[in-house]
Image 1 (spheres, rainbow, N blue to C red):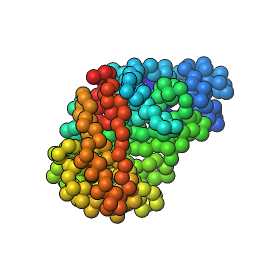
Image 2 (cartoon, helix red, strand yellow):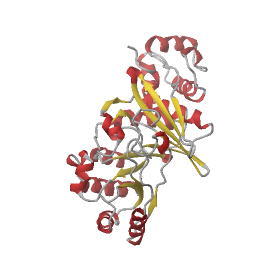
Image 3 (cartoon, rainbow, N blue to C red):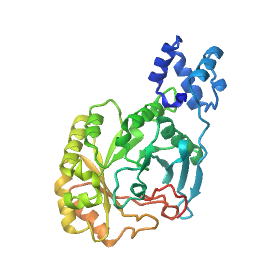
Image 4 (cartoon, rainbow, N blue to C red):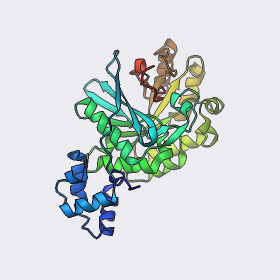
Length: 340
């Protein structure tokens, strides 16, 4: 099977051209034709010599543009895109409308191996990692569906991005390449449940991605029940890596805390969480739990009290208003099932 040309970064394509005895400068023209012009065939690579177009067709494959099934929320206009990639591997993306902005939530894996007890994707198990071209294809489809430029990208869809880090890293380089889509890395956020080695790698890398860490709970025993990855990378190590990231990048980290009614939303839970993160440059996003297959309790009195307690402790804290629960598009509900 031929490798996909859209799985290559521009640097990798330049290297491939050198191996073919061609000039690497042609990589920029190929990128522009593939990503800016949306060329669907090697014959359509404008700016690339005809001889080279034939060589590329002999050595690489070029998949057609993804054609996802689209579901639209009647409540808030959120759009969910259901993809079926090679081998039938499903993945979902979400276009999130906001006040004067449009965001896209993109998947890095088909399914997920983390097994978080509250997450519909985790219940699927891992089907496979998505290739760079499949991650980029989601962006392209979301942009077409949005009908206007996207304000931000969040890698918070299906999968644990840092367990598919090499493919995600390549996708980020392709998306941000000036010869291609030119989407700024500074407007991309990657969310992890706490893969410590990759957090450390990101801290020392030239990538300008923003980091979000899903804490879920402030007590390690409770977190272990909800997040099996706690056994591999305990919360204390995750927070230490987040501190290192902030120090190395001179940037803040986003913390995500899923609020479960009567489980982790007490005043004691808020005090414990504040004690863990108040010395870290951060923004805390509170996410009311969205059970798989149905809407959750939403912003309860306990959630509001939790927010007030965190703000009083000195932590910048916001409530994330979940969108698209009627089409199973809210946080934790992606399971490649279409409508509920």
